[in-house]
Image (cartoon, rainbow, N blue to C red):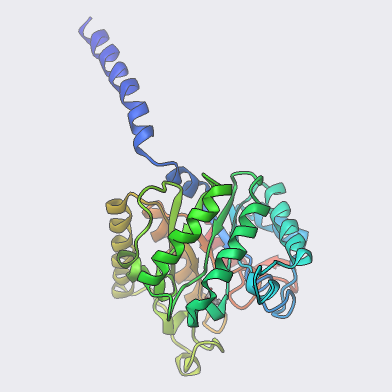
Length: 335
Ligand code: GLC
């Protein structure tokens, strides 16, 4: 009898607590969880024009990503190269149709997709671009308002320079207010300044009343390892040959960084996405594999979804010549 009573009482307590627990967890956590393991379809739509950086999207790419076991795609897009320079800053309809197609492909494959704005180089240097930025997002938001809730927005990749955490937090809140008119609950991804640095999470502020935000950071440390030989990283030729043996010190530095991020997430009740990480192809494959595996596992340890940078270009996990995954890299991502 006593046992029976105990079971009944504990079952009642569990049931009574369940709605509370659900209510206490903003659904951004569920939205973040759905991102799971992802990959950036980089160097395609965020090139000055598609193909210019060697990547033209194909339907097979979306299928290959799904088949390999990924849950999501981050789609970088250079909207600023496809909008009028002056008000009303109309987006090029042909280009929009291409983005529509990419979103369709992802959705048809059952992949969650983060639609972002990438390489708006002018706004990082000059805040007078803010109205154009807002106008582009107003159009994007209206265009995709009826898309399924598996399409997420990310307003701007890696804010930096003039977009300090203070300036960016303010601009983000303004544009969010506008986007929320057409997309009241769509998950929106946003990261801090200094190129979405993990160390800037504590420096930017998010609108308290919006519970559909997923915070993001990018991770490329040690930079001299991940960016050796990368033409866009100044002085990177001198870093060539640097390995990542996963020494106890290296592993500890990684663990410390991610623990700091997890602490921020807990304190602010915001889910976190590792939106980019990867090691460039100039590094040796064994080190890349060790680093990629270590970073992905560290993210998973803390429950952070992640998106590898990137699919089939300089960091590529997929070889577009042979149409094959680079098996060791894929295994590092999805063991
Ligand atoms: C950022 C840049 C992208 C670069 C990557 C790795 O996302 O926008 O162009 O390839 O980081 O450096």
